[in-house]
Image (tube, rainbow, N blue to C red; front, side, top):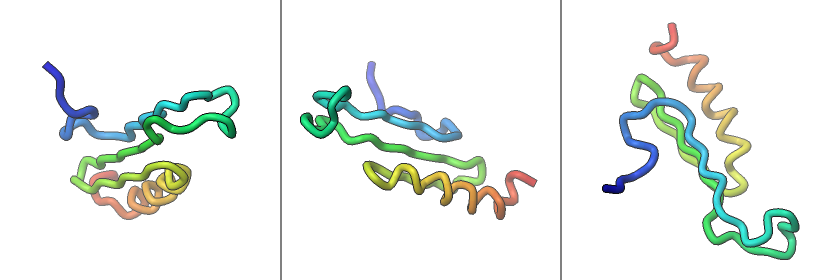
Length: 72
C-alpha cells in the first residue's frame, strides 16, 4: 500500500531532492520532478517550498521557531 510521503503527522523538515535527467551537468538536462521541502512544527504550523525557494525556507522556519511557544 502506498500513501503520501511524508505522512501528515510526521514532524520536522522533509526534503525531496527531485529527479534531474543529468545531475552531473544540470545546464544540459531538465527536471522530471523539481526539488521540494516541507516543514511541520509540533504546534501545527507548516511551511512548503519548491525549486529556487528551498534555500529561503530555512529563514522562514527559523523565524517561526524563535516565536513558537511549542519550543519554550
